[in-house]
Amino acid sequence: MRELRTKLSLTLLAVVLAFSANTASAGLMTNIWDLDTQGSVDLGTVIGQDLTLQVGDKLFYHDTWFSNAQALGGVILPTPAAITVSSSVSFEGYFGLQFNIVGFQANVGQAANFNLEFDVWVHPDFPDRYISDVHMDLIGGGAAGTGNASITEAVSDDQGKNVLVDDLGFEKTTLFVVANDQGFDRRQDWGYVEPLQKHISIFKDIGITGGTDGSAHISVFTQHFSQIPEPASLALLAMGGLVIVRRRKA
Image (tube, rainbow, N blue to C red):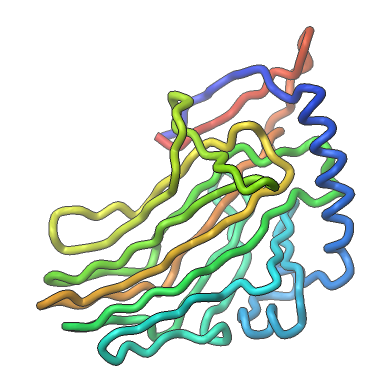
């Protein structure tokens, strides 16, 4: 369930940051793969062709994407070519990515993890939009026995500073989703972005372990980025600032 949250935002500083972000993102416009019109693409192709991905009003780019792969006990690690990226739109209309991983599984005595990292930009054709929330969902994944599958995510600004807060405004250092068979199963997590941003950096640590008597796998997860103004609503002009209506995941 979603509830409305209203606050004053978009100060002069935000306008300056927006101008800088749009100027920088213009450099990403030369080699775009539009996931909505061109279809899904594997990360091997993205990295090899130095592609900028686009979904709706969002651009996604990084020079490496995939790094720090480690395995224990014979786990077969995915290569970038085994990770397919496609467009994803949440039911509220927020744009993002879906990642599909082939064959990422750990059994008894096995463990593995790797990092995914990418930057998210508001497309320069949408100067009035700002990233306001980040949502992560583990759709395909599970564990049995002592197995555990998890994704931890950090979200930072241009200076590398954490920008996540919870619904009370307190700092939230990471997003975290996990699947296991030990009484804890969290498939969704989200956080507000404060202050609002035109550009953020995402760093994911993706791991699985079979433990002493179990198994785990991760095959599908999504990432969505809420925007202000929302697709179905307008920002309200007010004296001294812009009144923004925001939604959050309950």
